[in-house]
Amino acid sequence: MKNNKTVKAKKVLAQQANNYGVISFERKRNVEGLIFVIPWIIGFIWFVLVPLVLSVRISFFKTTLADLYGGSFIGFNNYMEVIKNPQYGEVIVNSFLNSLYQVPVVVGFSLFVAVLLKQKFPGRTIFRVIFFIPVILAGVIMTYLFQQDVGSVSVFSSLLSEATDNNMLAMIFGGGLSSQIGSIMWKSSVEILIFLAALQSVPDILYEVVELDGATAWESFWHITLPYISPFVILNAVYALVDSFVDSSNPVMGLMNSLTNGSNGEAYYGMASALSWMYMLMALITILVFVLLTRRWLK
Image 1 (tube, rainbow, N blue to C red):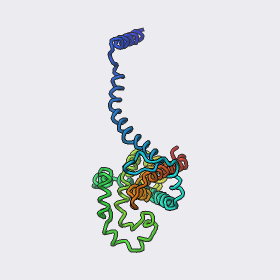
Image 2 (image 1 turned 135 degrees about the vertical axis):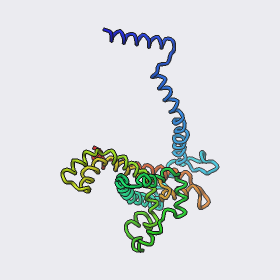
Image 3 (image 1 turned 90 degrees about the horizontal axis):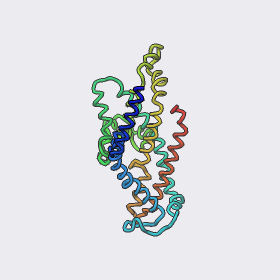
Image 4 (image 1 turned 90 degrees about the vertical axis):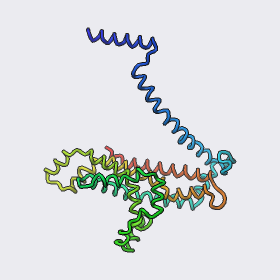
C-alpha cells in the first residue's frame, strides 16, 4: 500500500514538473548527449558525406580542375574505359594479390609479437610503446621517415644473403626483407594492440586446467588461446585487408594519383573517381566474401 502511494506521488510530481516546464533529468542527459554529437554529425556530413556524393557525380562527368563540379555529362563512359583498359585491370589485380599476400604475414607477425609482449620480462612496457609508436605518429611523418630509409635495418642487410632477397618473403613485400622491417612494424601496430587486449581477456583458469592435464605451451596455444581469440584474428584480418587497400604504396593509389596529377598534361578526374568507386566496390565484395567464409569462427 505504501509503495503504491509512493509511485502515485512520484507521478504527480513528474506531472507538475511537466506543467511548469521543468526539464527532467533524463531529458537533460539526452540534450547533453545531442550537443556533444552535433559537431560529429556536422563534420561527418561536411567532410565525408558531401565529398562522397560529389565523387559519385564527378565519375559521370568529364571534368577539369577549373570546372571540377561542372563539365560535360558522359554517363558510364568513365567506368567503361576503366573496364576496357588492360592497364587498369592489371594494376587492380596486382593490388589485390599484394593485399592477399601481405595480410596473412601482417596478422601472423602481429599475433607473434602480441604473444611475446604478453609475457613478463624486464622492459615490457617500453617494448609495447615502441610497437605502438607508429599509431601515435601521423601517417605523413611515417611516410617521410620511410622515404629517408629509416625502415631498413643495416644489420639485417649484412646477415641476409643475396639469395634471401629472391625468396617468398621478398615477393610478398615487393623487395628485400631487410628494407621492409619498419614497414611491417608500422602496418602491424594496431593489430598488435588488439591481439594484446584479446590475449589478456583469456581466463587464466583455462591455462591452469590444461597445465594440470600435462599440456605443453604449444598445445595450450592451439587448443585454448587461438580458439578463444579467433574472432579477433578475423577482425585484424579485415582491418589489415582494408589498410592494404587504402595504403599509399598501393598500385591503385599510385594510378589514381597519376590520373589526377595529369602526367601527360591532362588530368582525368572523372576516370579517377570511377576507378576509385569500382575499386571500393571490389574491396567491399572481397571483405564480404572473407567474412562469410570465416563466420563459423565467430561462433
